[in-house]
Length: 337
Ligand SMILES: [Zn+2]
Image 1: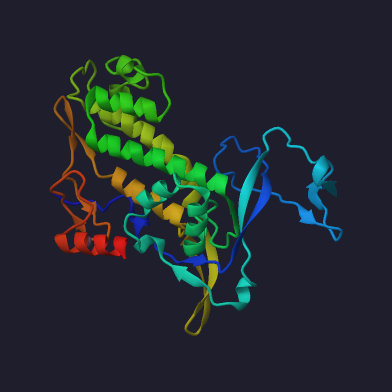
Image 2: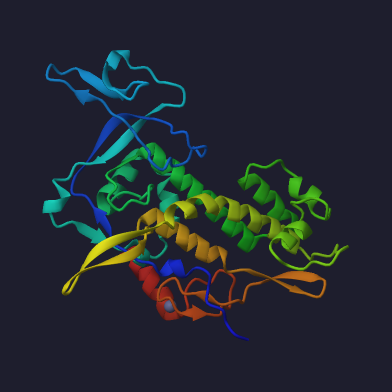
């Protein structure tokens, strides 16, 4: 059988991420954009007060005509949708004149789990992580110079939700998987079970499978537990869609070459958070749903890519991340160094 290349070649996109020399924390107000998704407004525009010569604080604001104005700190009130946040700001000297510290998020094993864990730590731990590794990369902008603690937490919680769903798909079956999927997606308990065998319901296993392009014969009722996986995969794809759209932007850059410069395109997916999503997408693509006769089943033995060396291998266990003992050892060593 011909092995098709994995769908997540983007996981190979590596890039370097810049670490600032000096970070400060400021009180700020996060203005909510008109974007319907509360998570990560693309142009997140936190504002913070400026100190006047007499020591008082004023907030720079635009009025309804777009004219700049300043509001005294004691007069500033939160508007609907706004909230106070703690903004981490890169206060390094001019980045054009320094030699920045860089690292490659794509080469760090277990980065996604590390970030989910970070999102549950206290503010000081998050601050220390940023000081050591640079920003999390919420806006997929390599020149990012500010992120609030609150945004980081929200983004990492969203990542954690996606990864919990991946783990549930890997470990649970049938109604246990259905109820865990419902819990993780905040859906009413019992919804998927209620819909599972009703072919007229768009969220039933058969209807979703048809939507994914699998030819399910009319009247199919035997699913052998695969229906729960189809439903969970559908939920997972919805959770992954917005962040992946965010991170897999392509932009052109004019880059120096040995003898001059040339225009080239690059995926804006170099930050730690983008890398964590690519890692998650890669893991989510491990189980394949195969269809034989009237039965759907989950196939764990479809080829996957080694999280360390990139080689494609056929797994012996469902949660096998590395192609060999050698890569497993190297990854665990890198993790603890
Ligand atoms: Zn390997």
